[in-house]
Length: 501
Image (cartoon, rainbow, N blue to C red; front, side):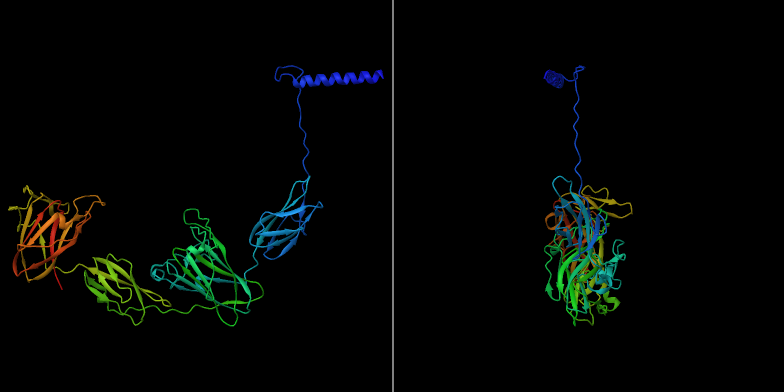
């Protein structure tokens, strides 16, 4: 008993001393300071393997594999049931992608198994570049190297064979036709690439299969562009369709605007079927039959483009130079230059005609600052305090500054009496490209042979151009024109008179 009591006493004292040391002040250099160490034991990890002893696997959509855990009574789960599901260790591939299968049990660290779900090889791969019938609504494909046409490809190294179809615009169409040896269900998958993303393809394209609309509302295309126009092509599913046998199957894609580029159409059949593309019909190029001389006109003149093909639609690629009636092909010259007119019709290769618009031949050109002109009774010149001329670096002279209220009077001869369109070769007085145009009717007044002239139009830009400002009646022989600066006149160089037709 005494030994037991003494032993207990010693233990108590030692424990008390230990307690005091643990509770004493820290960092005081005392020998009573103690250190504590936390000891943890790692949980054992569950190991998962497939039938081949592997810890990852690639599974084709629709197929299954069985996994085994080295512990009994585990709970199975998947990180993405849209890609792969799991039930008691049996993994079923649902859709292309990756998923992680987990096995969990209390007292153990989760075991994991990586599953990559892939598609089976496509039953058929059709190429939009060669197997599709193309229609360019604006004619740019055939005439600007923009895509389908005589050379129906666009080079893109990230496409499956280095080519695809690009540069779609509003109204463009792609139609793929193929046959099937069996009436089976099939999934249509299109390989697309672009440096934009479309959360819903319905905003940019339409699709029909065998005349029935395909709902693209929940179909998204997301780009991986690096910002410099480089991007990959991704497979986008357009859903399942019912293939027909004994007749053609037709996929129609319509563009609502600038859409992704198209590379391949991949067809995955639910059961055995042989798919063959139907070669697009050969297209005839639209021919315009006007003689070459018809393709050069002058401002204000018209020419109607003719063709043996009926039902053509026309558009101008430069309406500031020439406009065209969409249905009749009547072209009107607007300003000096060239304009491309596109003639198009679905089922044919469009054609481009270049129209040249020249300046209308004038009856006469009057130099404003010539000796025949005066300003407030004195010759127009450097020493005229009302109207000054300036000599440009090229040696040309023009009326630079004229005082408000100053009137320039010019006498000239006309070879033939009649009504003429009067044009002023002039420019704005401001160097700024955004300067407010000079309204001729407000800032100027004019008389021809002492008869008031109704002025109209605006003078804009700091480059000399001819602006039509009104109509005048000239008489045989000498005519007199008076131009007054009411407030803010332009720089004025030449007067041009064009006989009315």
